[in-house]
Image (cartoon, rainbow, N blue to C red; front, side, top):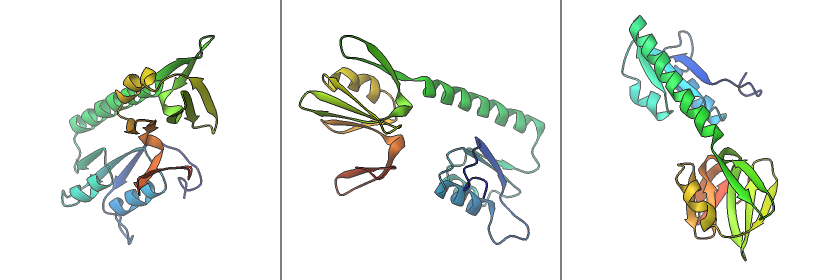
Length: 178
């Protein structure tokens, strides 16, 4: 209920076997993912029989009990490395300009870019739009080098972090637009 009510955390550590419960830890993890939890999920268990279920919900790690101090230290290092990369990714930005001024836009704020009649429409996550004259080619190389971005058509670059689904030759974004 904490996540459902807007609570935020970076990591969830779940036991697989939840004594006295109808669900197991992988069921809880699947429910968290459905609620939009994007954090890391680490499972603890006495058995490796649930490993495939754990990774189906994109588990970060799967620890077998008893857990040694060395194994915990390796997990800590793995988490530190991961979050260091996440912080670097969050800093990635595009510098755009209109000839008079420059502006920095974080990659994580770009929902998509569309070009119509030599005007670039940068749709941003705060529901604003930035319009610039130019070519998509000016920014495509830098954006497409980042795995978040895809160019499904010559007129668009989309940030996959904002994509909900792709169907019927349409890309649907999390905000309901397409």
